[in-house]
Amino acid sequence: MRIVFFSYGTRGDAQPQVALASGLVARGIEARVAAPENLRSFVERAGVEYAPLYGNSQTILESEEGQRWLRSGNVRAFMSSMAEIARELDPHVFASGLEAARGADVIVGGTLTEELSVTLAEHLRIPFTFAHTIPCEPTGAYPCPLVTTAKLPWAFLNRATYALFRRLAFPIHRDAINVFRRELGLPPQTSTALGRARELGVPALQLWSPHLVPHPADADVQAVTTGSIRVPASVRARLGEAIPSPELVAWLEAGPPPVYLGFGSMPMPTLETFTRDVLALAEALDLRFVVCGGWNDTEVVSALAGPRVHFVRAVDHGWLFPRCAVVVHHGGAGTTFAAAEAGVPSVVCSFFADQPFWGSRITALGAGAHVPFVKLNQRTLHAALQRALSEDTRGNAAELGRRLRNEDGNATALDTIERIVQSGARTARAT
Image (cartoon, rainbow, N blue to C red; front, top):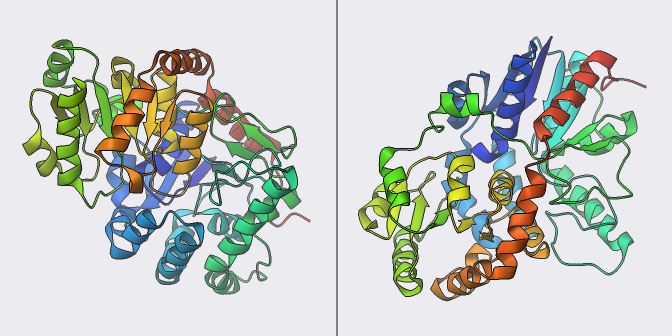
């Protein structure tokens, strides 16, 4: 039995799939993760079988088009940019996906790979499911995170935002996926992959905690909110992130808990200016900062580091965040969960996609603050840090952390996948 996960995006997008693939292997089930080439090293170092998908998501984000995504903060502009990139990439990604799926018995599609995953499952006549890190199933409880984070007055309006997103998103891949389907001898796809999954009653894994996003009362009966996914300690060790450097340990022990600052895989066009603002804030607020470089220019940041600022390249969030006073981050689903589980307030500086949604959830729970990155400067970060460091916010964050530490999202997700395997769930060609 072999399960193939599909992921296209940053490390944060692939990380839950890698964690689940590792868990399946530990249960005696073969698993493979298909992802863009720039994530090959991450997947393989984690000890998981890798299959390449065409392209480099890091290059896309750092391109002129990718920078427009990050600056826009607008769903229509985001979709327009997505369409331009997809026209070039889709035929190559789909072809590499077919190769990656060879020998699969079950396909698990992630965000941005839904249409490909359903088509491959239909071609191979095998079961499939989705593993999402953002709400995709229509609900009246809240709007589609990729459309708006505003509070809408009526449930039907919230539901309408999901229909709007499908209307905007499906044409991006429709022509390319139907050419691909024709080559595979399949009929044209006339509705979204999510719609097809609901028609078949296919379970959808929602990889977040109900304490962060409550499971809606009107949710599809096939939707399983698993709890957030942790990277197992054994995988962290293989990645070389389980043991912190002696320099970091000594720096932490030499003073009060610092503010963590890191934006994951998000490229920053004003990195040097921003770093100088951080240094000024450290002095003004009498704070210490530990700065994580991600994909950004580490030489610029490390050259500016001083007694109040310590630079790290990569670090285990599960180890570091409980030792911090506040976590300032981009609002990726994984980082949001790690900070919340640590019981530490967050300042979410969202760039695009689902990140504003996670910022709004942290704010709604009283566990931090949200400042869109385009509005981030020394003044707004100062105000956000003061809010995050308040007694009420720290108390709310601590309580949220206690709740999250009592759940096991990995086990719930793995059990659900095993049930799909054992039950011989309906395939994409089921009638």
